[in-house]
Amino acid sequence: MADSSEPDRIGIRAVSELTGLSIDTLRWYEREGLLPLVERGPGGRRRYSPAAIRFIRLVQALRRTGMSVDDVRAFVRMGSGLEWHDRRTALLERRAAAIEQQIGQLRQDLAVVREKIAHHRDLKRRGLDCEDEIGTAAPGALPPGEAGPRTTRTT
Amino acid sequence: MADSSEPDRIGIRAVSELTGLSIDTLRWYEREGLLPLVERGPGGRRRYSPAAIRFIRLVQALRRTGMSVDDVRAFVRMGSGLEWHDRRTALLERRAAAIEQQIGQLRQDLAVVREKIAHHRDLKRRGLDCEDEIGTAAPGALPPGEAGPRTTRTT
DNA sequence: ATTTGCGCTGGAGTCGACTCCAGCTTTTAG
DNA sequence: CTAAAAGCTGGAGTCGACTCCAGCGCAAAT
Image (cartoon, rainbow over all chains, first blue to last red; front, side, top):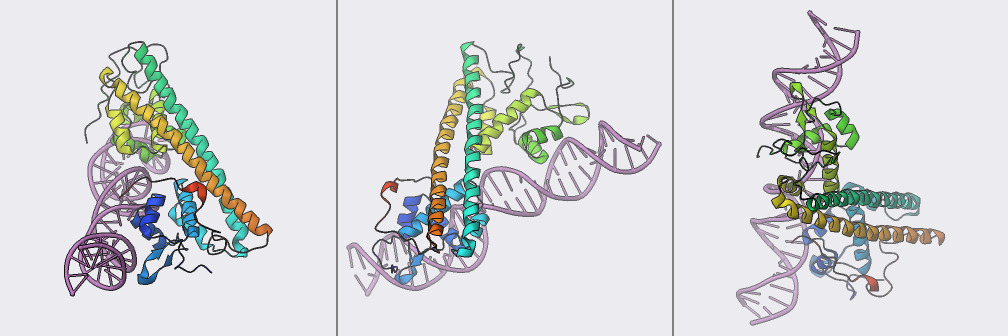
C-alpha cells in the first residue's frame, strides 16, 4: 500500500522544477494546509507521490484562476468524505464557471488592447502624433498642441 | 476645445460605478500616475471626459491581464511623443501576446478542474469514497502527457 | 572523518495594491 | 442659512501571498 519508500516518490527540489512553484512556496502551502498528501522519508524529508503532484497541479489551477489561499484551504479541508462529496463537486463546478467567465473577460481585455494597437497604427500611418494623450477619442477633430501637459508630478 | 466644463464630463462617483474601480482606487491610480487625463472642475473636483474613461478602461485591461502598476505607469510615462510611438506599440503587442498565453493557460486550468469534476462524478457513480488523497493513487508512474516544463517564476 | 550541501523549522520581513482615516472645503437639499 | 453629503489631500494601515533568514540535522562525496 504505497508507503513513502516507494520508488516513484520525488523530493522537493524536483517538484519545484516540475511545477514552477518555489521550494519555499511548496513548504508554505503545506504549512497552510493546501497540500495534505505530502509524506516524509527518513530524516524527515518530504517525499511527493504522483498523486501528491497531481493534487499540486489542481491547487495551482485553482490559485491561478483566482481562488484565494483561504478558499483553497477550505476546499482541501472538506476532506474526502462522502458527506462532503456533493459540496466539493459543486464548488469545483462553480470554479469552472468562473474560469469560463475569466476567459471571456480576458478576451474582452485582449480586444481593448488590440483596438489600441490598431489605433496606434492608424495614427502612425497618417503621420500623426499621439492622440490627445493616450486617451484616443478620435471624434473628428484633434486640435494639436492643446491637450495639456499630462506630465503628472514625479513621485 | 473641450474644457472641463463641457457637459460630457462626469464625477468620480459615476466613474467608480461605471468601471467598478473604487473611488479610492481611482484617486490612488491618479496619484500613482496611471491616469493622466483627469481634469478638475471648480472646487478642485475631478471631472472625467469620455477619453479619460476610455483610458481607464485600457488601464483596467492591462491591470487585469497581469501588468503591474509599475509597468502601467512606465507605459503611461512614455507620453505621446512620436519618438516613443514604436516602443508603445511594441509594448502593447507584447501584452496582447501575453494575454493570448494567459487564455491558453486558463483553458488548461479549466481542463484540470473539469477532469477533477469528472473524476468526482465517477467516484460517486461507483459509490466510492475518497480520491486524491490516498485513494485513487496513480496506477504506474507519472502521467505521460504532462512532463512539460511548466516552469515559471521565482528562485 | 570532514566538508559540502540539501533539507527542515519557526519566525520575521517584504512587497504590491489597495483601503481607511482625519481634517478640511465645497456643494447641495431643505 | 444651516446641515448633511460628497470631494479633496496626505499619510497611515491592512492584507494576501509569499520570501528570506538563522540555526540545526542528515547525507553523500572526498
